[in-house]
Length: 264
Ligand code: GLP
Image (cartoon, rainbow, N blue to C red; front, side):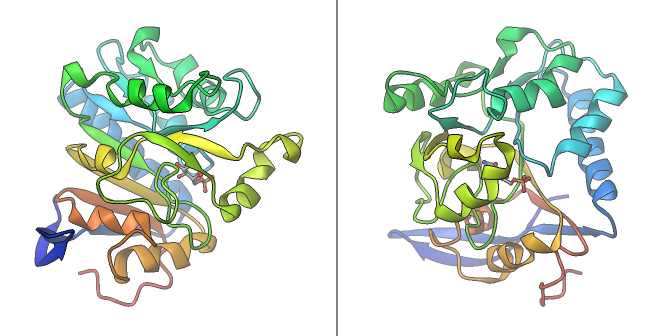
């Protein structure tokens, strides 16, 4: 499946095609996880040396559980994670490195050098972002990026908070207060919640050949509505996905509950 072109729009002096993304709505979060896991598995079976970009957070946990259960061969695949807090020790209980290890990396046969995530304690975040932008670039574009969406009205992808531009690359990004409030729950001591992050940029993410975005729960409904039916722009960074020709939104019914436009 791929998205249908529906319009041309002028953005920053350039005409861009706007697509109508595929939107799949499932009754339960488990079915979202199952469909997402199948999509990842089909990708790796079809192209065993695929490069994936993967997210963290609570949404993809079921997808990872099923991917692990499938026991596929990851020996030739590469994973370039979306983002990491800055500053955070990679060994910290809430770091995205630990999150990935306990949900996926520790249970698949991916060689250690084939998995990358920004270094949350790099001395200079700008240098680390520039280094990370180039990770695995010599192997070609990311084949499949799996995304979540940020809390409330942030509409962030990765940690591209409101104000992120279409042309943005991997960089240091201060966190929106809504993000800090929502993610503090992942920290044993909420005062450890970092103020910033290193995230792949919007342009970096859009270079993936195929993108799937997962959202579950009614707390994502407002953001999904804004992303799919609002204007495309930096006040809803996920809306930039509508410039990509091959994006699928995989939603549960509560996350889709505010959509008004027919998806058929
Ligand atoms: C964080 C991550 C995002 C993720 C979002 C959603 O902010 N940086 O990449 O999509 O959380 O998290 P959750 O799945 O827990 O709702």
